[in-house]
Every structure is written in structure tokens, then in C-alpha cells.
Length: 362
Image 1 (tube, rainbow, N blue to C red):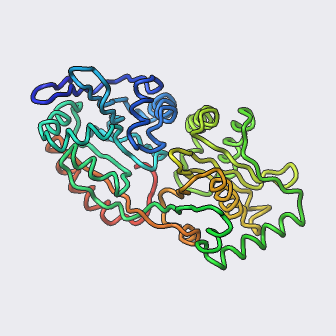
Image 2 (image 1 turned 180 degrees about the vertical axis):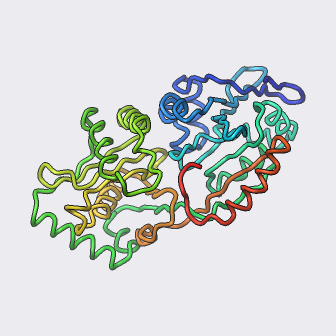
Image 3 (image 1 turned 120 degrees about the vertical axis):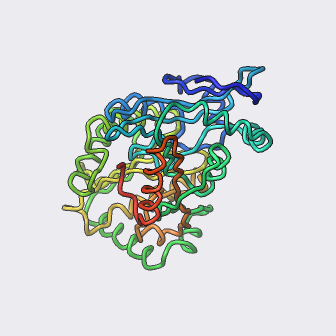
């Protein structure tokens, strides 16, 4: 539906959008959005994940009526669950931070013209409930402006460390002393007993194999682990290869001889490293704490490259606090669009307010 009345913008929800286009890349670069709204990530999301989860693409776009310049993109999906129509952010258990993509001028215009808020809601497709999650605390005002909704705490946080060079000084001042000593001791022990390499992968075939290895190493360890599905592995392989070429993605490998000890996959954007996936051979190398060794090595490298933040993303695992991180609360927005949606919204607010840890996609 195209909505134009009362605003200087045209709002429309479309079922097809070229996230690899120059105009979206330009808007994303000005938006301050996260790596999960990057052109490569969203293009792969809609090609690999959405079709296999019964999710129809619905992308809200806004253009300046006079110039036709793209001003807002909000990627959404529509699913039917037990006959219930759920319109939601592009999460599906893989995207840690949801955010609308718009430049500062759009938000200024929204603050001055509340008719835009009505136009946004009128442009959305028919649904019972609009659900936006997970949302970092700092992004809540944007959704409040768009929907006039109020955020609901999901009961868990994301954790990130703000880095400073030189890394050794920052490490001494911010990483828990017992954690530092343990990592150093186990790193020395692993190097004494094995021919150790820690490397960032660049070859496409090696990267694809590393993503498959992560899935294999994680098998049976996490309930509802998305990467165990073949289509999800293809999604991560696509993002990892194309992202490495563009600077969005990075894949790290810790090896003892020819044996994979641990592999980490993450995203990099705007000086921020987003840690997403890890797979380690805990049966053979668990006593060496390979995950902690990898985090330390990657944080050092990221600092040396001028990176300013290492983001462990969502989840309140205790080890994160020992790496000098600070928590950021994570929220959801529920906007009922029908009587049935109103009832479900009340139930979800009650349920999510009591949730203490992320449980994956539901």
C-alpha cells in the first residue's frame, strides 16, 4: 500500500527490494545502522533463510516525494503461525540487533511531523501483530518514533568492550586478572605441545569449509542451534565469503598442526567487531580453553587495526564480563493490528517480561 497523504514522503511496503543497489548502500552508509542491516547480510537473509522459514518479504520504504531519494528502509517478514499473521523484523534467530535504516534527516523530519507516524502504520501490510526484536536500548527511540509503541525488556543484555591501543595496556587494565593469567598459561601450554597457528581466513573455499566445521563442532551442544540446518549454513557461507571480500565478515581459525581447535565467525562494521559463532573441539582441546584464546587473539588484532569495540552480542554468559565488557539491555516492540493481535500482545508482554535469556527463534 502506498501512503502519501499529509507527509512530504511516500511510504510503501514492497515484497521485493534490491539490497545490493547503490541507493541502498548509500542510505546504509549514512544511517548508523548495524552490520545486520548491511546489504550483503540482508540480501543473503531474504534469499536463504526467509523462504525456508515460510517468511514472506515485506520491506517498508520511504522516499522523498519531490526528489524520489530513498529515505527509510525497514526490512520485515510476514509469517503465519497457527493462523496468526505475524509481521516482524528480520531476526529468525540470526540477527542480534534490529534497526530501521534511515539517515539523520529522516528522524528529524519524523520528530517534526507526526503525520509520518500514521503514514508508516498505514503502509504496513495486514497482520495481527507487529513484533520487532531484538532491539538495543539505544535504538528504541527510533521505533518509538515510528510506531508510538513502548519497548519491553527481554530480560537479557548484549555485552561489548570498548578497546584502546596499545592492546597490552588495555588488556592489563580491563580484562579480569585471573582470566588473563589463565589465558596466558593455556596459550603457552598449547604452543609447547603443538604446532599452533591462529589466522584469519581469506580463501573462499577455506571459509566455506570453516563454516561447515563450526556447524559440526557445535552439533548437539545448543538446543535449537540455527546453523545445524543446511539452508542456514548456506546463508552463513554466503555472508562469510562475500563479506570477507567487502570487509563485512571475518572468519578466524585456531589450529594445532592440521587439526581445527576452534573457529570464530563474526562481522565487522563501523569500527565494531560483532562476535556471532564459535565452534571448538572441546573433546580433544577443551582443557586449553580454545574459545578464550581465540577471543583474546581477535581482540588484539582488532585493536591493532584501529577497531574500537569488540561486541560479544546478546547473551549474559559470565565470561563476557571478565573481558572488560559493559551490558546493554535488549528490548522488543509489540504493536497489535487486530483484536487477535491485541490479545497475543498482552500474552507476549507478560511472557517476555519474565524471560531471562535468549532462547532462539520461537
